[in-house]
Image (cartoon, rainbow, N blue to C red; front, side, top):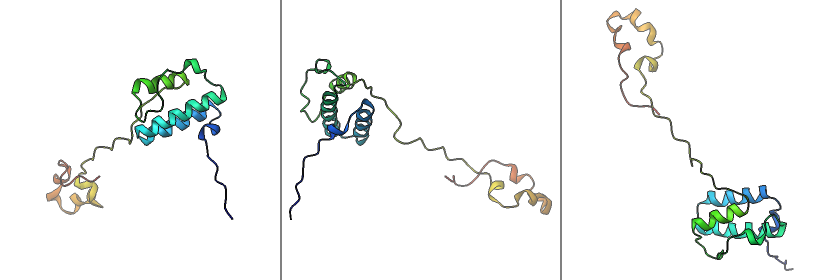
Length: 132
């Protein structure tokens, strides 16, 4: 028994501007120019199918290129009623802090009572390796 495999057109699933925006956002997040160009072609087809954009408002360019110029991508996004935004890929890591020895030792606050000679040593600058 053989199963028929049919072509899937993702443009048919993009029935709103919000769906098109999420679809394109994922394409841009992937980071490959050819993936973005392909997603833009799908988005334009979806916009035509749902009549969310008129053909005349789209830029006259070759959307069959794998690497679209940025100006073309921005024109297509504008015609679709979308805009390109930029976010940080990963939050910046916190700067490692130096930890004073008094914080590392359990009960360090009682050491001056036990041994008066070390009373001033716990108040000094942080020493040792940074812990991160």
